[in-house]
Image (cartoon, rainbow, N blue to C red; front, top):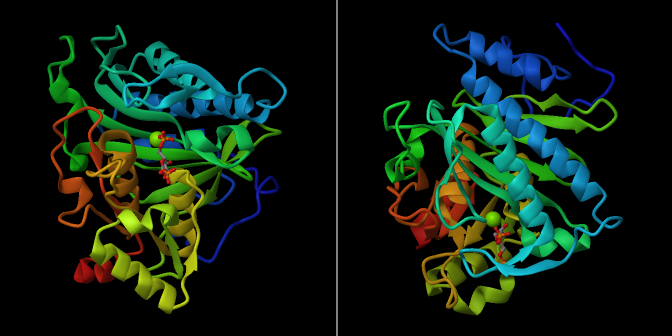
Length: 343
Ligand code: AHM
Ligand code: MG
């Protein structure tokens, strides 16, 4: 077994290591191969797809690290389909991921936050479709604050070899076969699930390898962190304001980075609740169902957490639109249950 045990520090009280799990220090490639071998009829395509995403994320990581030195910060002067200003790194990340997914050959269609329509990869024999937010947390790009990539993978429902359809991308959250995120933070970490628990891989920059650092991540049942944009509180529904008052009275800690990946990851490891309720500007919520809410909800549930829009589990929602927005409450299960009794 290939391990690089000297290259990472084993992490956190939340990381438990089940008997059959691969040890901290295992490379991502080795881990993916091992997961694949658990499925007797697996063809290796999903494994390759995960490797493609990992490779693209390393390239993005390199661009982010050099961002202050080369001309990749700032806005492009164009808006994306959501009417939001595109940053240069948003566009670069979008190009890199789409190129990686096209070249890989396993994916027949993609939906990206940065593109209006479905992108056909030119690989009609690809079995998978991907929903991706190539660079999440745009407002933090220029100021050296953590940003991320979020992705979700489905098996297509249209016949292999045919032209992919909208139905391939408008599948329910429980149809996801894998989902993950990359957090470009104080270190770069890839966290993903294929429905067999959640594992995290820290990028060893000197080796250029993702190394298993967080095994079988479990979200603490409760926690002391609440995360929301406090500037919007006056616009939140009354019951949400009441809930937040309870958090404050209980002396919980308010922590909000403004990058979903970073806020989610902190709360996943430490325990807490993330809230993006409806606001005047975004009455139905701000976050996008396909490439923000679904993947985070899949990871949360796999780690023992919960994700809801206040009415139902996020994963039970049937999407109707590629760029559909939603209210999102996600985090430690006891905190979500408490929220649901309040609203
Ligand atoms: P983006 O995909 O355009 O970056 O927007 C999504 C981001 C999330 O990462 C973050 O949680 C949220 O928007 C922050 O929104 P706000 O600035 O309204 O608090
Ligand atoms: Mg985003």
